[in-house]
Figure 1: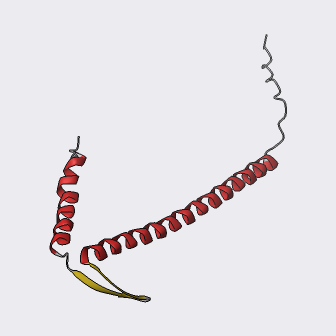
Figure 2: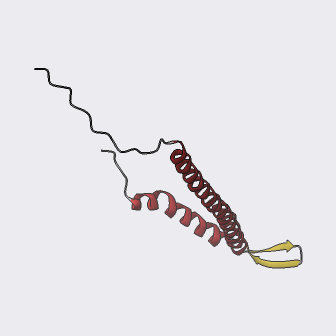
Figure 3: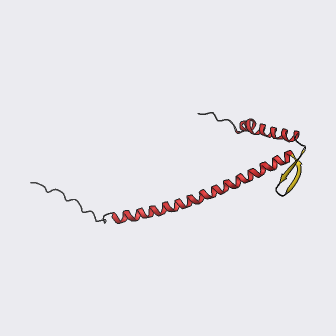
Length: 114
């Protein structure tokens, strides 16, 4: 039986340090920075820009993933329909090539020798 660590161990080893690191970066980088984009300029705290970037990238990644999943689901539906049609065609071909069913003649008993 293999050892399976509890989910709380994952939280303390991976998630908690990332959260602490993010909080520390946000606390020590509270000064405002100038952000130039296509339509203008805005001054925001650095942590606000980092969070906004993270959220934007996460949303774009989710959108791309959903598009890929929907495309794969459509392909699965198409392949299932193709499989169903192929199975129907195979059944029809087997029915055409099978010899007609004839009633089984009873086997004659060998004649008795006196």
